[in-house]
Length: 538
Ligand code: AHR
Image (cartoon, rainbow, N blue to C red; front, side):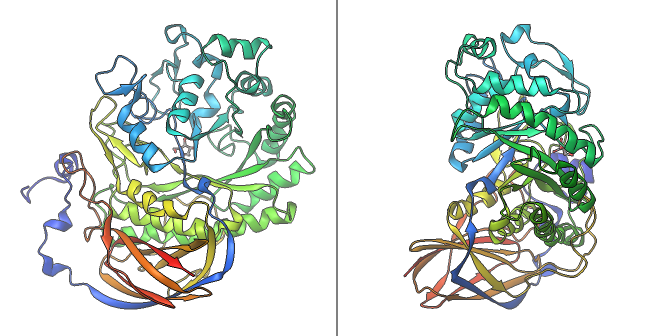
């Protein structure tokens, strides 16, 4: 590729190279730093719930239409209308929970318009995401069919902003009541004789913003009213009740949480409380400068502090932690100026994979405070695990973020362990303010570590977020003896490297060297890497 490409031509070319990779190697002379870490195998934090690795899909851009659903008559290979590559890749990854249909879209969505014969469904304007005509061809049965196909638990986000308690209560009856009522029989007539048994229900989305610009007290009053009827119809005996998610803050907004929880009083209370925290970025996805990358990555310690702080606030109302804290939407949100493949279509680079690793490490370290985390969004929107070449594109690639999630899969259901390491934050001044769409500091971020264990298997994840420093990590293990270890790594020296349609395997997981002694492992983390070590311990 000639170096005289314009910036726009360069981004459009979709080649899996960036300007940085075309510069002479001598520009990048990495230094090597020695880092120490310690894993406390006898100090458990809590279970790494598989739900920490959950996802979110909205009627936005080419996420649902084109990404998940191409229709039964599409020339794109499909299974009953679902894009086959999406199904195959997601089954391999495992999607514990999938939230749908929004996002902002949820508070303008009327579920009855998305059931019955597709050709008779109402056409609506998607007022949030481009004012295109939404033909409702992907509705409740399609979404729940997709969840079944990929082995995911559904999480339905119900409409508060333009909806009613009756609409939500009816949706629950339609989905979950076995048979005999008009609504459940309608479901049977629409092709689903068995109840869907949907457990997770969101009561509105971002009620402080696109969900209706509520004040927290008003949002709590809505929750109490909606939950009364949702539970009346949704609680069908032990082990078969609905889990209702109340709308939490943008970022670490204490005023929202206090206002909402004060007004909730004795309830009905939410089972889960959601917060959203995006990590904004100042550059186009594959044109990041190291400085702007650091500004973005430095938001992650703020995310961690926010989770700790929000849980502490909730503990004041809910000391036994019966209410689960949910990070309902998270992920990097870069500058997105090109909508040609769908709105908010965002390439994932090596930087994005490092960001994913930083986030997933946080969830392990804060496992006792979290119930579920949903990265935004599943496919073709923001920090997705899959990308297609537009809604009709036949190509589907696994992004760097997909592989970062793969590296963390071995942690699922294990017990998170306490870790200490050089560079562990927090830095002062965190834990305040609203959403996290802008970073503040450009100083280099540090090593990040988390660990978990189940029986004789221990898993340690490391992230080196520096673009110019290789890290030699000496990781001591306390409370267990290491017998053997294997390691896998995701790495590219180019912060902007990505898996493009003409080079889909540029950044993938590789085997990596790790040295093991009885009480320690030693691993070298090249600049810009995410690594997972799996140990057999006694
Ligand atoms: O994920 C994109 C949007 O971000 C969602 O619709 C909304 O909930 C959030 O503001």
